[in-house]
Length: 275
Image (cartoon, rainbow, N blue to C red):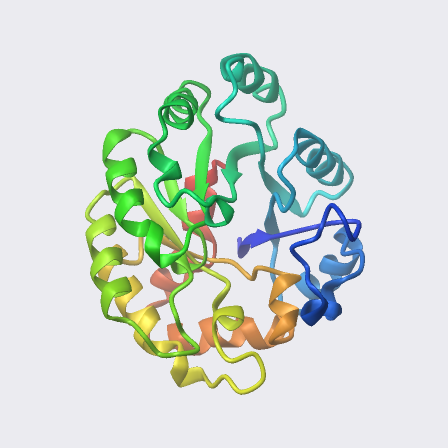
């Protein structure tokens, strides 16, 4: 089974979705399962993991509802307030929905670069294993140092880094990011998504070769058993079509064995998220 491990749905609202600024007009509209289904069928993708874009429990319920009506949505990564005093109660509540596989908080938007190390946040993270929930790390390169300390605190918790931690592909800067990615990859409970590449590159002028150094570092650090494909649709539409972003990964994986490709394109996502 081929899995797109990272995409979003939303009914666009200019206040709720204020992060979609005017230079992103192409995604200032609704994106719903029927829109994605066409792309998945066309590109021979069997299923997807829907990831939160809004930080509310309503968002989690919205994604659960979409999955209930569309069987190609194989899992949901929702949002819950991991800093809340009643977090155990909320995790127990969401554990009734088998489609909810894990949670995410948009750490990259927090002013505190060490947000991951906050006591209240770490308390919430410490309870995820109890309910077999995963955690997606959406962070920038400057957060990787803190993320490494964070992952070390929870050796039995499954973590996955979204979008390679957003390296500076447009500027072709790699040195500090490379060292920090290698360091966090030493923790075997940490995985990495090959997603969000085109939006970190020059939106109008990217080339396949722009991504190769970053993919090389990621695969050398994590190996083929801890890396998985994700489109980041519809955000990827800022810089590419669905097919174009997929072709970057397919072209890169061309020299890999058939079994290795199957792992990256589906098996690893199935195992990580218990799809």
